[in-house]
Length: 364
Image 1 (tube, rainbow, N blue to C red):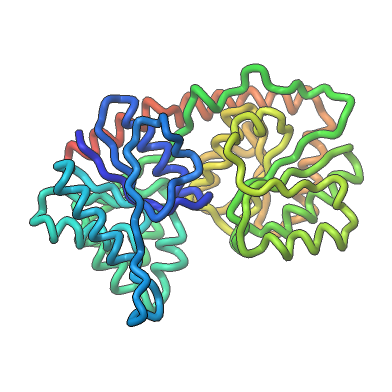
Image 2 (tube, one colour; image 1 turned 60 degrees about the horizontal axis):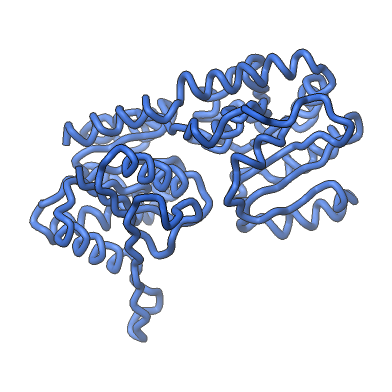
């Protein structure tokens, strides 16, 4: 099958999911083309995916560069040149609307599939300035998927669509994210606590830092903060205010997540909500127990008390107390580490979810 994928190239979950999907499909023999304004972090030269860069016109008439129109034109060009069967857009705006324009430009030579990832529905799409556009876009798509049952319910409740989305959970690449050769729990040094995100307000990075501050008073630990985004500098300021500079490390975007995660002892994601939580799944696959919010699709990934710990949003003291209890018990930690890796691979393994995507494409 010939597939064009359109996505954000940034470190957020939607771009990572789209990139990993493209790579995995290419390795299964599909002809995959990824279209974006920059090469995604995980898309290497030897991935088997053809990358097409969107050039945004800088013309004095436009106050803001017309990225969406340039994306639509590039997608139409790729469809015609490579006889694409399916354009798979990740994120409703701008990728799905640009894909629909490309489909129409090329006289419907390709079908349009859209995967909704969360904030394109609950945040951006729910704003009055975008609502009608997003609803029209989803109804015009030939097929829609969501990454969790929770997001499917949110989408139907907010937009009252003409068709139900298909739920296809995010997957993990078992060949890279696994618990083999990971650091053992018993260590003479500080335990590694990890958070990875795009540092938007919804991620509640300040809660992550405050929880860590309580944990490190009882358990020798350091915190790795992976990623970048609007709350990065305020997070640095809070770390300085709490005098944690020596044990909180800001790494920026990470191109080798699996290697970092295999050194971890607890992964923290305390967001207001997550549509799924791909970083949580990748951590689980590496045998890292999770400390997360009991919110959104995270409850479909993390089993409380079995593969991780779920706490109320904003419950800093409760989260810290439960984390300390886990980190002080080697037996409990080992049990949870093994259960996390087992669930990640058994339920969210790559091959199983890829077959679901292939069947979805075939129905279009």
